[in-house]
Length: 204
Image 1 (cartoon, one colour):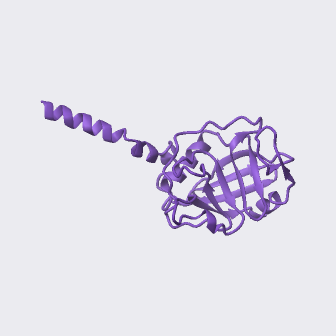
Image 2: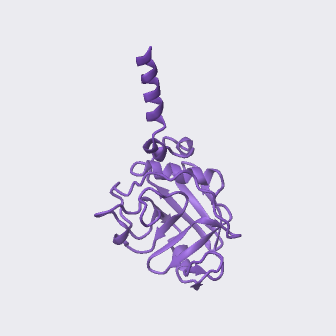
């Protein structure tokens, strides 16, 4: 009897272990579950960008991203960081400067072989916390090899821009400056809004 009880408790603890929780996707695993390359359309006040996601090499990250999209959590958010020749970042703040509510941080998949090359999308994280990515993402405007893994964890790439890169190039040219609301120095002076993010049908 004691052995059976011990086995049940051990199994329960394994299921609830921190590593298991880190790897648990956020409902995105139910969205087009057999599609290894789902596409999404980011609709902004400056135009639309279509991104093809790589579920084969970044399943945890893609499922996490799709979960936020399916709940509409990227709708009416802002692009809060623009650095010409480097990156464009969003997904963290609503247009009223409140935070997008984050889910549990996910496992860092930066070792998946995908590089932070121009036109790729990757997850933002805290500088000194490898597994801290939640909702914020960025699009590389250059081959940012400094963001790839090396002697330490890098930033996990999980997709590629396939349409609308010209929109990103236009965003990169906007005037930026210090935002008192956010405390950041590279915020567009004229707000760029993500109107909504749409998961495209498989045939699109």
